Image (cartoon, rainbow, N blue to C red; front, side, top):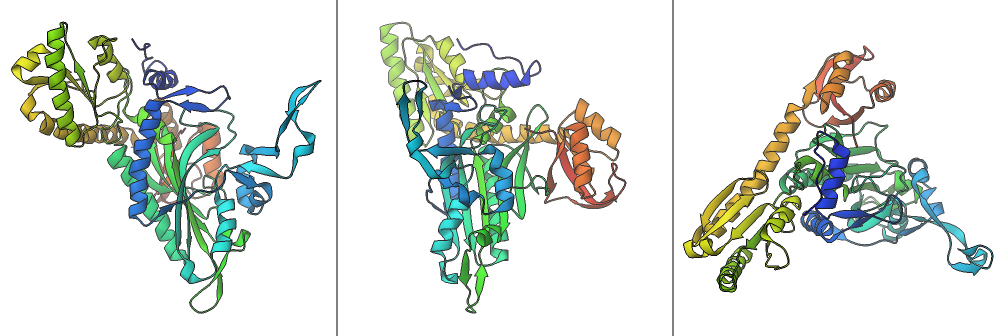
Length: 490
């Protein structure tokens, strides 16, 4: 049996770790702050990759790959960028080790590199160095590239999936002839991320723009999607950056326009990471374990044959095999667990903690009656279905579960989104209710900083929808152009 999962209302952080462990998603690494992604977790990431990759290609992007090592001088070329990442960089200084009689294994002093290499925290610098060689004319534009890779950011406080020193992600980097094209690209990707979060992950998100203090280092504007977790904290689930001409100027990337004039290229970058798995866990899962939306679940249906006698085994497995073939033919990801080493009760529990959306139980009586017991992971509801109707029933049920998870998460977010007009009410809501708090902001960094220092809440975004509303910032007493979303966040 799986280990007992700590209830959410008792210790949410421990509950989160218990769910990951019980569902066999990841494990801690011998290297502090890194994680081992187990097959269940990686299969989930692969499904996320497949969904996003298809959406990127539908919008005209291609995949490429750039080196993990970046010359230190590259990072120093864009001032805001180096300032933003300097404290998080892992640095390679030597190319080999040697065995020293006194100290054991040490870097070979003779192998010290002429220039230190940075293990990529992100790839803007090496990519824009490359683009400066690839781009000469307007005919070379746009360049719409994405890469699936790993990055390293030397974090001090880490948590599985949410914040680790090494993580997997995709990073898109595009080059454009005009500012308008680059801004349009930035918003196109924001729409892709929003659609993926809501239609695949069943996670409702707020689309918005970051304040100057929260934007990506080196960006002109950072757009984001923000999701609300069950504990009332916000999670930044994806970002899309309009970089202006900052990196083009840093790397002297110019092109000859249609009027034979030299211009600097306009840029974007954007990314989501394995942090999305953390979001998925914290939005949908319960005290029994992981709950997965069917579109992303590695196994959508687990079929468990039940029998005691050898003659029952033959007939039950025969029917199970036929059902498996029918479901697979309909494009349903099904697994028949016919392992004799585990009892049916153990298997029921195993697939419950692993979040498999639908569980089927098939015994001798079901074979005789041409029925199957169908159990939903999200509600626990069980029904008996005729085998002849099973495939259609499962198809409809998976769609129902997918939509139901989104509706439930949306209702939860709406119930924990509060508009306030006083600073006292703002602090009370944060402490007693949590969630998103919509309050007027005067647009100054001073007010933003004061609220963060006093409440640990940050402006998650300036929303792209339902923002314009003249008012007064209750903290400073200054005029405000609209309400922003505040929350405590991961």
